[in-house]
Image 1 (cartoon, rainbow, N blue to C red):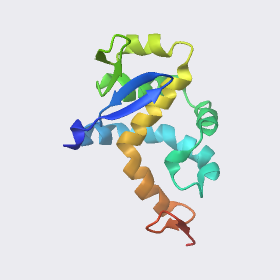
Image 2 (image 1 turned 180 degrees about the vertical axis):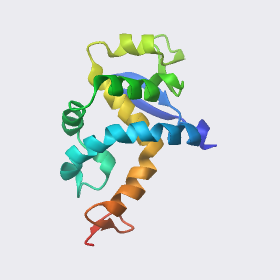
Image 3 (image 1 turned 90 degrees about the vertical axis):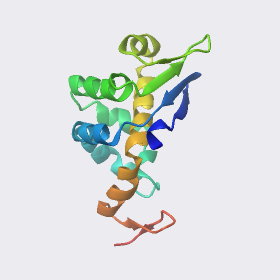
Length: 153
């Protein structure tokens, strides 16, 4: 079952385990998520057109685009992506794996918020990659062939 497939992500020596959201939960979150990603994609799309995949954007572009968004909105969606639904776990120093909670996230990412954004972006990729790979190229400057190369319209 796809919902039980776990993706392992390592950031700065910490090992995280991400399970996909149930389809209906992902659909419900998509409105707010895309309201945040819309401005981001608008800012970074010129940097990634021709790069092969919308999800290959660079961190500098992502950080620059995030700076124009409401802090409350970003905090709410990051909380939804990382802790609210219990879909992210982290391996502790003693080898135990525990669910990422808000308190644990606050401790782990204190002074290293960039890692929290990178993890949130990995959760987005895990849950919405099909949208970015299949839907956005259809509305972009060129369509992609079966090998992922851009063809002129």
